[in-house]
Image 1 (cartoon, helix red, strand yellow):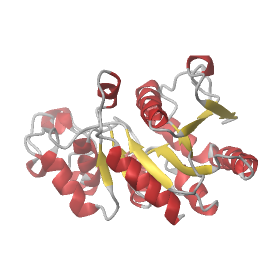
Image 2 (cartoon, rainbow, N blue to C red):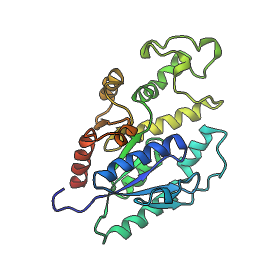
Image 3 (cartoon, rainbow, N blue to C red):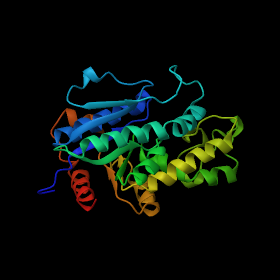
Length: 259
């Protein structure tokens, strides 16, 4: 990136705690490597900016209930519908503000489940990299969802919970990362959008590492034509010096230069 500005990154987590924390950990890693960080967040369940004085925060009105969702599926569907326009307005404003700045926006990193961000990034010609906060194995299981339906694993029934899933051995039906719901078609649509828009990004960062999930990573590599970065677990970066993030940093630099 010699002679190029483009060192500010926009990050948007899914607004639930198990996803906010890994995104903020990734932000800390990238900040330690010289990137300036702007966290974009819904007003729902937003983190306290005073705990992260080295980051810039930008919040947008999301129209979501301010209580913790009791129906996770409908919450995720609603999030991906209601946040499109306010998120786009927020990013547009940031891009306009940063045009004359010393550190204009380089790319967007968004939680994989916030798949609505891909269309916005495409519309604004902003490179998007996805963060998947959980393991690679769960994503491989999501890819096999159509097969699960065909085999009768979905909707899940108590009588088959102990059955081994042949294609994902040694996992059993009860181990599959599924949301219990009375609306399987809605869940299937959510997963389909999530998988499609992940593949439409420039690359995926995983909060996992190759040595832990080699078989799953091998399967995933056959499905993906985009770069995959298993650079986790993120919390390990804060206990010792690590160079594991150098690959994603080199890729980010290249993506920014190409853009």
